[in-house]
Image (cartoon, rainbow, N blue to C red; front, side, top):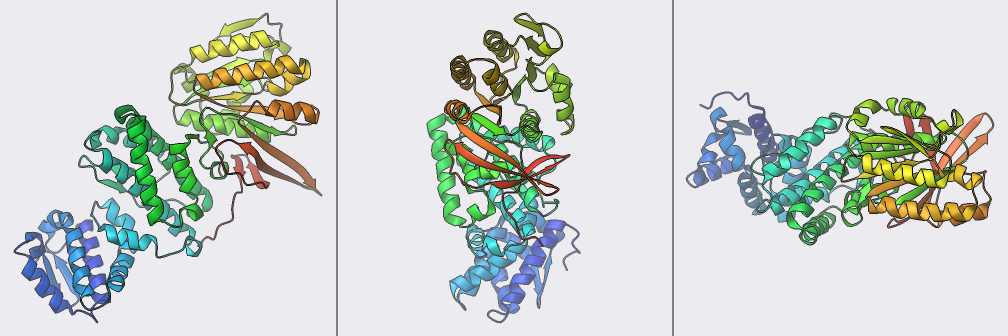
Amino acid sequence: MPSKMSDDSGLLMKEILEDIIVDNSMYVSPAKISELLTAMSSEIPAFKKIHLEEKKVLIDSDGIEELKKVFTILLDTLNEKYAEHMTQDMSTRIIASIINRNLLALNEADIPIPYWAVETLASDKDVSDMYEDEKIKSVCSIYTEVVQHLVSTVEDSIPPKNLQKITKDFFVKNPQVPEISVSESGRVVIEEPHITANAENRELIISKYSSLLMKYIEVLEKELGSDKALEVIKGCYEGLTSRHKGLADLGITKSLFRGVFWPRVPTGIPGLDQLLEGGFPKKSAVILQGPIGSEKTMCGTQFIAEALSGENSVLVVLNNTSVDEFKNFLSRFNIDATIYEKKKRLCYVDCYSWRIKPIKDFEEDWPVIRVARDLSSMGVGIQKAEEWLAPSPVKRAYIELLSPFLKHFEFDPVYDFTQVLNARLKAEDFTSLFILELGMHDTQVVSSIQEVFDGVIDVKVETDGNEIKRSLVVIHMKDTALRPQYYPINVTSEGVRVEYETDKTQ
């Protein structure tokens, strides 16, 4: 008699097998299944570890690991047996639906499942009919599938152990999202998501997992070359989109793969990344414009906080805010600026302090370089800051100089300075966010300066009685499908969120 099981993996397999046998007992009796397992045990010894007593399944506790390795074959065998007595489609969907209920648990337990079951269950339910917890589980499963494809496809050139450290380090820094792990054998699993089921957390998962994939892609490009890496990624993309028809409704189709064909830099602003198909185009220069207010500064701070949490190098050019004030903004997002300054990940070009004391040309006091209010000093200061920062695959810049320079200097030299600055920042791999205050310049000046940039985002603030309503629209963004409408902005002490969509929750 088999011993009593206490292993969670064995209990999971037992429950799945019992569900399959009960659901199909009207087609094939449990006794017939028992005979089948006995007959096949000569070829597959692990099947000897399974015992059926009417509709109950018992598994020898010492055979669990052996059985896990052949569980896919067992499900294939059952599906073929049931298909003899019903249509193949029916038997497949019955088994697939049971696997679907246990999909993440199977992944977490490292129990392989047949590909046909995953493919079938993915197309069974419309995203519009899912509750938010189901959407989150689907997102997690899809990203696991993507990582598995990339790991399996390149394992002859890049051993799984070379990708393990990337994954492990990523989730040490991002403990709030379900962890994906890669075993030495190349098996990819994901933990059960213990996260509040809402649209904001789904967007967080999508943003973080997309960042992880970008790290994988960087390794692929380094080890395989860009052409081979793109071939691998395109193959993954084509297979995924053919199997999962509801990717766009989940919000991950373009945000997942736009970063492959058109690299993206996440903004750190919930809702905006989804609206921008994953973030700002890499090495782009974007204007964030709007009336005087804190909304733009908060967006910029979140952009920088996102960068620092991902170990990017960041250049901050301040005119409207002092360095100390900006550090206080960062602290709201649990960012201790001092840590990153010591690592040369964060530095400041200070065009604010000239108000307090005269500055001739520039003063170096790293991580701060203070500059006089003139174009030449600003240009030298930014160049020195670029050289001071530590190297980083992704660099970001937050720049407050547009409005004060447009107001203080003639338009033509500011226009030329901005063109040169943007070209230099792109050449140094910076993705830049420029702040522009509306209401200070005539429309022709605003329209002309926008020509220099790759994207323009407009913030609108309106008063409705005692209520202040804020909203945002992407007027222009290269390599991005635009949605020409304003979306509500929710501003709290925790930051800015773009209300991109309304979801059904359970």
